Structures are given as C-alpha cells and as structure tokens.
Length: 331
Ligand code: SAM
Image 1: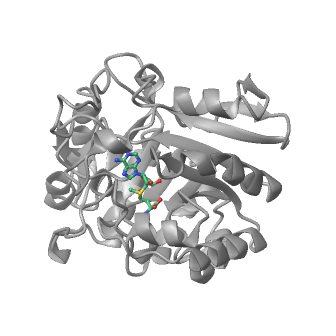
Image 2: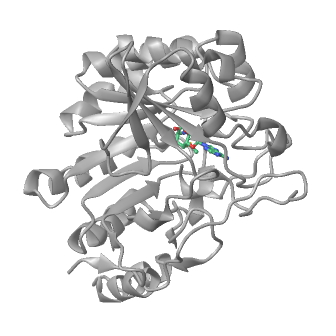
C-alpha cells in the first residue's frame, strides 16, 4: 500500500541522515563550533536498516543516505550492503548517497559493488583556497581524487553546488564546463535558512533566477522535462552538450510535487525540510521486535505531512526558518 499524504502526494523517496557528524564545516551549513549528538542517541546500523526496510515495504522506491557526511559513519558500508538486498529483490529502484567526496577514494569500489549506480557530490568551488575557506576543513585535491575513483568504479556523478553570492557566482561557467567535460551533470542550489551559522545568510543568498540570467549571456539553455526524482528543474546547455539543474527552494517553491520524507540518525522523521514538525520513530522501533507500531507511527506521520515550507531570507528575518542545521535532517 502506497503512502499518500493529505495533499494526495505519494511518498516514494526516503532520505536518511546516517550521522550528523561531518569532516567539513561548510560556512553556510554549520557553525564552526558544532555540538554533535552523543553516540548513544544514534540508531544502530541494524535499526537504520530496519526502519528503511519498513519504508521500502510501504512503497519507498528511492533511498538516499546523507548526513552529516554519510561516509564518516563507522561501518556505513555494512548498512549499504544490507540495504542493497532491496535492489536485488526489485523492491527498491535506487540506492544512492550524497557525499562531500572526501572519503570516496576509499569507498567508491564498494559502493559500486553494492549496486549504487550514481551519487551526488557536493562541491561549491574548484579553487583550492576558496574550497578550504568555504569548507573550513576540506582539501580539494582529496575530493577530486575521490571523484576520479568514483568514475573509475563506474559510478555516475552529479555535482551539487550551493550558489553563494560573491563567492562562487563568477565560477559557475568554469564549473559547468569542467563537469560537462567529465560527463557529470551540475546542479545549482539556493542556500536555505536552516540553523544558526556564523555568517549572515542575507549576504550569501543568491537567487538562481539571477544566476541563470547571467549564464544565458554565455550559454544557450533550453528547458527539458528530465527529472531524477528530486526537485531540480533541468536545462540542456547547447555549448557543452551537458545538463544543468536548478534547485530553487527560495525563488520557486516546488512543494506541490514533494515525494519525500527525511529520517535523522536518531530516528526522528521530518515530513518537510522546512518545518519543525517531526515524528519519533525510535520509540515504536524499540518498543517491539515486530514492525506494527513502527508502521503505524509512519502512517500517522505521513498523515501530517505539511503542504510546504515557507523559507525567507531577508534583512528583516534574522532567525532561520528552522532551528536545526541541514546536517541534522540531511541535505
Ligand atoms: N556531507 C554530505 C555532502 O556534503 O553532500 C551530505 C550532507 S550536506 C548537508 C548535503 C547538501 O546540503 C550539500 O550539498 C550542502 O552543500 C547542502 N547544504 C547544506 N546547508 C545548506 C543550506 N543552508 N542551504 C542549501 N544547501 C545546503
């Protein structure tokens, strides 16, 4: 039985933040001095597998592991391998992950062996110094080597870049050429007001409508109906022969087609990235070895999925729309 929310949307996509920890501290994502969850609060890998499996039984077709940085969760490949049985059975159409790429050199081969076909790599700049500045702790070379390893292992890669005013706006044409020359799609994302950070989001926010207009001076962009099951809207780029995506939670709210819910590493289910309402799945998960209570809690949560988010970034709105950072819910 499919999961259908009060607005008639079928929920077929689960994103799972397997850890809130990350080996980077991107300035728009986290404060430098973050307090992470105590390890004892985390669901075990077996528990994560159990919740995911119930979601698959209830109609989820696409599962994305994210974080924090999913590849820094200890033994995460154990979870990936366990979940891959649902690919083999045909119940799940896609198992994928979003990563900052820092650990890909180590894990790319194992991911491909487990049936992962494509992954998203977050990369906001190709300038090593700027990369270090925006991630605070990251090393660009390591990420580029990770991308090489992933491609060598046969994984398809989509590069995701958050558009940041005065930081990478001038670099997007170069990143577009670089990604397309390597056979990778590029998707641009508007920064969202999630969690307190050390900077002012108004200074960082760049509407993609402006960026697209800039790109159109140099490139011929044609809208295409291509979709990957997410909110990105794509264009073909005539000059490079590649695809460019736009994720515009701020300038164009795409909630009407929302097909997803998000599970945190502590078993909290968020029905919307941009709302505070959540459901605790850990208690029903641990209350019984049978899955009836867990399944009922999921149904109850889906019944409360809100119509959409209302993110605002402007000088008058100093508080973030939601208090939690992206690393909690999983971007
Ligand atoms: N560590 C992994 C990674 O870097 O892809 C997965 C988690 S990270 C939170 C997922 C994505 O969310 C990244 O592409 C990151 O750039 C993006 N992100 C983080 N904070 C954001 C914000 N406030 N607005 C928009 N995107 C954000």
